Length: 243
Image 1 (tube, helix red, strand yellow):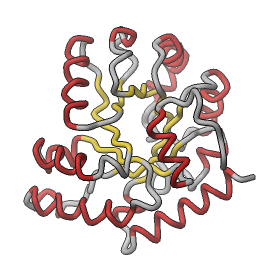
Image 2 (tube, rainbow, N blue to C red):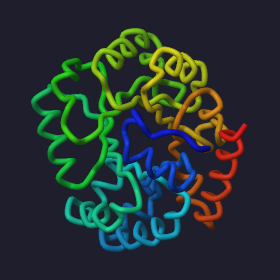
Image 3 (cartoon, one colour):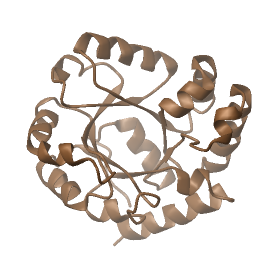
Image 4 (cartoon, rainbow, N blue to C red):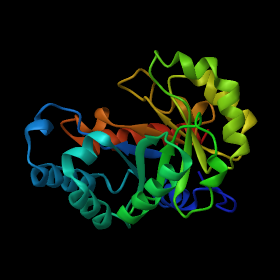
């Protein structure tokens, strides 16, 4: 699994991957009904406990609206700052507003401590947002089967991703033919692949077809032993990458 980090973007994510010999990003959303009834400090405590147990195996943490709204800004910032040296933090708000609003939002996300952010490709003007220190990942293909509008407009989205010099792209792990196509046509982009286990993609499937990292949530967060589940996932990924 050795590789040269020169030219790898986002570099911080790849450094964690090299140090931990892992390609696992945790989707930290806690999508169970109990989190809707819990107090923010209780949820924060669960997140702290979970991330402490996963430091050996997980390289990045993806955080979207569910957890952010449950925690609130102050607790979210506390969580990120406490684990900043252990994980790459990816904001998954899927930005899709006008360029001025997106740029302002990205600055706020960076202030919270996020290293990267997901952004839609359809609104255009992405070149005006490239260059800030926060990494941008364009959403090329979502993982759920109803994402047919992405499939119908794949060529245009791919062209936008290529022209805008993004740090990486999002391609659902369930869409292996699109992972292959993106790997072939955007060879230097970092490809993040959600939709593993719960949505149907097998562990390491995305890596076999050219993806770089797999984003996995409930198969770990809902497990009775999250650390053991993460360890088993990473072992499968390592076996695939070493072939």
